[in-house]
Amino acid sequence: MEFVTLNDGNKMPVAGYGVFQMATDDSTAQAVADAIKAGYRLIDTAQAYDNEVAVGKGIKMSGVDREELFVTSKLWLSDYEYDAAMAQIDKALSDMGLEYFDLYLLHQPVGNVYSAWRALEDAQKAGKIKSIGVSNFHNDRLVDLGLFNDVKPAVNQIEINPFFQRESELSVMADEGVVAEAWAPFAEGKNGIFTNETLVAIAQAHNKTVGQVILRWLTQRGIVALAKTVRPERMRENIDIFDFKLTDEEMKLVAELNTNTSQFFDHRDPEMVKYLAARH
Ligand SMILES: NC(=O)c1ccc[n+]([C@@H]2O[C@H](COP(=O)([O-])OP(=O)(O)OC[C@H]3O[C@@H](n4cnc5c(N)ncnc54)[C@H](OP(=O)(O)O)[C@@H]3O)[C@@H](O)[C@H]2O)c1
Image (tube, rainbow, N blue to C red; front, side, top):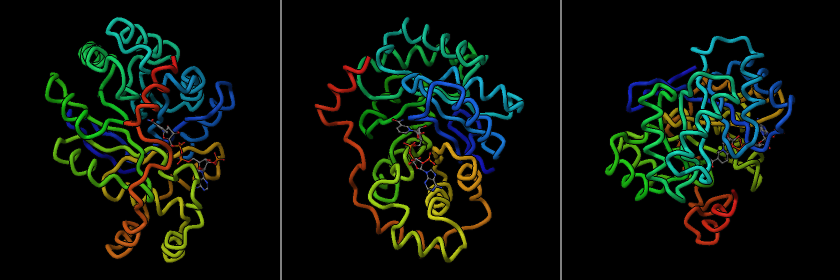
């Protein structure tokens, strides 16, 4: 496993296992235990995924020491008021059977972000969270949050995949010392990503799969890459990305696949803001 160093000095694995759209029951606990067995050390869940209990159970089942793992969860905007945020951090820790989170994120840039961020800062001071960060923040919101608070976000978790490469966001994050973490690196399979000709040709050249090429394209540039799968054979495949390197030419070919368009939705669309706000 390779690691990146965050702006607070903590180290974070560059490849992680995500559990979005996975069940709330023991099948997710088993999948998390399988992922850790396959070699994953970074696990990414969220209050909004409704599976923190199952993820905590899977972590216990794995038998791997807590200090070896890097556990992330995220606060939903229904709890962005200071007291509610503090209470939810305690609840999430208790639900997961953990003493601390390695990373805790504001899931969306919507609602009372400042109050929630100050709760994260205080929970970090209290030792409940090692590193604090955000998700889905556009450049202006990210810089603003860092400027008007004591602690700058360590991480911004955003959609990054070959069809939506986020060059502008990556450049601002590099300037600000914020590590980029990619969600939906496979665009959840949309737009024929696994059969894309360019990606298939690069995969064949390295005797790897398209999934492995995408994850390598991210991690090779220091971007933390999450990937979700419920299948143990794909967990092993998706973590087996550290024995090859894409050439500069191959990196350029992948860069050409950028359409600069989200494969999902725009967090700045007013209708999306209303949708997120209603999702309490
Ligand atoms: N912060 C946010 O707002 C946000 C939003 C979305 C996601 N995330 C995080 O990012 C993680 C990853 O994103 P995601 O789950 O949306 O999508 P993803 O990882 O891009 O794609 C997951 C899909 O790809 C399939 N897949 C996985 N590995 C594969 C492989 N090697 N070959 C072929 N198909 C493969 C999976 O199917 P099977 O399961 O059947 O294998 C699943 O349908 C999430 O789980 C979550 O932790 C965060």
